[in-house]
Length: 505
RNA sequence: GGCCUCGUAGCUCAGUGGAUAGAGCGACUGCCUCCUAAGCAGUAGGUCGGGCGUUCAAGUCGCCCCGAGGUCGCCA
Image 1 (spheres, rainbow, N blue to C red):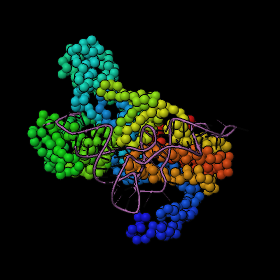
Image 2: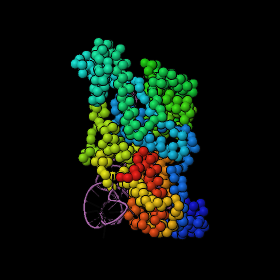
Image 3: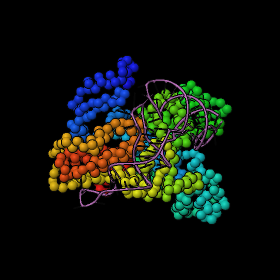
Image 4: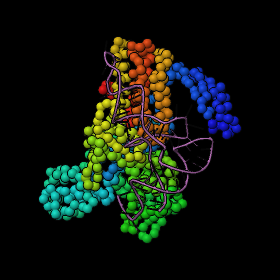
C-alpha cells in the first residue's frame, strides 16, 4: 500500500504481483485479503526447521547482535543511603537489572552501576537524626533535637542502639561538631550495607558502586566546571557560576552550577559524574534509571552532555513511576519521610523474588502500577508468574516422562505432521517470532515486552498441551521437541527478567 | 501559567501508521479413569476522554478543548 503512490498502481494489483513472485521452499500458499494485504501461509517444513534450529542454538536462540560489543553503562537504584529500599526502589532495581540482562543478550558490553550519594545535606540530616535517636534512647533527648526534616523510620533506633552497644555513651559529652561525622558515617554505611543485602536477595548485582565523594575528593566537579568555561558554556553572574543553555539544546533557561556561597549544586555534580562516564571511562552509551519526579531534569543533563562534546542521543533516561501496594483490595499508603513504607525486603519475604520481579516488570516503567500482593501470592492460573513458570515445569515433566524409558530426543527428527494442528502451529509461530521480541525489548529498553510475550507464549503452550496427547501420540518425539524449544524460550524470557524457571512445581 | 507524562473493557494495563483493538483480574458456563487442573475451552463486557485535521489507512501522527498526575529553587 505504501508502494501504491510511488508506482501509481492500485494496491490490489501490486499485491497480486508480489504474491505471484514470492518464492520460497517455506511458502505453502499466499492469499490477497482486504484492501491489498498479502497473507503468506508457511508450510510444515518451515515450522519443523524453525524448531530444529531453535533447539540447535539452545541458550543463544533469540540473541540478536545489536550492540556490537559497544560499552554501555546502566546506572540504577542509586538510592541515598538514608533508609532501607522500598518497593519503588525495587521497581528501579528490577528494571535496571533486566535492561542490563537484555542489553547483554543483544550484544552490548554492559556495566551496572549504583551512584552512592554519600555527601551533602541528606547525609547531614541522617547523621543528626541518628544522633538525636542516640540521645533519646539514653534519656537525654532534649539535648539533641530531632531535625525538622529528619528520618523518622524505626531503623534509626536500631542503629542508635547498635552505636550504644559498640561505643557506649561517649558521644553524650562530645560537641555535635565532633560526633556528627561518626553518626553520619556509621548510619550511612550501616544502611548501605543493608541496601546491598536487600539487592542481593533480589538477585541484583552491581559491577560498581560509585561514591559521590569521589568526585569531590578528586576535584572532578571543579575540573568539569573549568571545562565548561573553556568551552563557553559557563559564566559568572551575581557571584554564582551559571550553565549557559540557550544555544545548546532542549532546556529552557540557564541553571546555577556553583552557588554564591561556593557550594556546587547537584547539577554540577551530575555534570562531573556524566563527564566521568562518557569521557574518562569511555562509555559509548549511558542509561540512567530515575524516579519520574526527576523528568524535568532530563533536558538539562542532555544539554550538559552536548556541552561536553558528546551526543545527547547516547544518553537515555528511563523514568519509573510509583508503585501502589494493594493488600486485601485496598491501597497501602506510604510516606517515606514519616517512615511509613513497605520495604523491598518485606515484599520479597512475602511474595518471593520471582513474583515481585515479574509483577514489577509487567508494565511500562513510566506508568504507575498497582502491586496486588494478594494476587502475587496466589498459586494458580490467576497469577501470571506461576502461569508462565508452570509452562516451563510442564515441559520438564514431559521430557522426564519421555526419557524415562531410555529414549533419546536428539536422535529423533521432527515429523512435519505434528504441525497439522492449529495449536502446534501457533506455538511454533511464537517460537519463530522470539528474536523479534528480543529485538524490540532491547531497542525500546522495555522488559515489559518480555513479561507480556512470556504470558501469551505460556498460553500458546498450555493450549498445545491440552489439545491432545503428546507422549503417547504418534510423532511423540516431534511434539516433545516442540515443547522443549518452547521451554527454552520461556526459560530465556524469565532469565532476562530475573525470574527462575523451575523444573518442577 | 510554561513544560512533561497519562486518559483504551467493571478494575489494572498491553498495543512499533495497517485488516474484526488485546491480556490479566473480577463475573458467568463447561472440561480431570488420561504426560502436573499451578491447566484448557467458551460467554459477557469498548462512542480507544471530546473535537478538528494529515493519510489509501489513526488507539497510534498534528492542533484545540476537557480531566488526572508530575515538574518548574543559588532544594536534594
